[in-house]
Amino acid sequence: MNFNGAVFSGYLEIFWQFSLLQWLVFSVIINIFLYFFSISLYIFIDRTCRKNVLQEKDHPVTRSDLYLSFLTIICNTLVMLIGVFLWKTGWIELTIHPSVTEIVSEVIALLLLMDVLMYFFHYAAHLPFVYKRIHGKHHQHVSTNFLSLFVLHPLETIGFGLMMLVLLMCYDFSAVSISVYLLVNLVWGTIGHLNREFFPASFDRIFVGTTRFHNQHHVDETKNFGFYTSIWDRLFGTYR
Image (cartoon, rainbow, N blue to C red; front, side, top):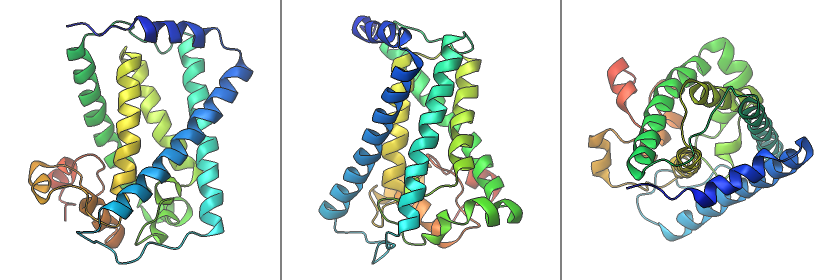
């Protein structure tokens, strides 16, 4: 069964004709929208899922957290503009009419490939020199809040984005698959930084990176470096 990408390809044609200024405005708008979508999702789940508490209180929202979260929006915008440049210059090519099977396969491939890259990237962020200067601020959130996902050093945000762009340069993913993956990534990151377990306990046994899994990382920084799965932590002996 083929995915009807006529509408999507029409949008791509419009985006192809965007000027740099139009891309800048679009990138800022979409990243601000995703920022507030994540915050709204966090608050909705937090207020409706009152069981399985992992931390009694959220980390207080500070002014520096707000500044860093806004800086993350700017960095994500920059990464998006770099991706557009690579697309417009032929370094990244997008397939237009994938089948449903291809979309599902590509999303799963992106999740697994990014998971292993993010494991090693995250592990490296905990090396003493890097942790002190870059990643330590994120771990001030032992309990988390609705901004924790965005409280990152700019180099972390850009590093994640560049890993994604390298993958897109190596294989011609469809625009639909990339969009679905990025949405899953945002939702997963939001759920992962809740202070109450979102997933059933059985998910731990099938190697899913649950909310409790990532919460344990904030409690014990030497364990659980994975993001979507616990596969690499189990394999390399960093699983708790």
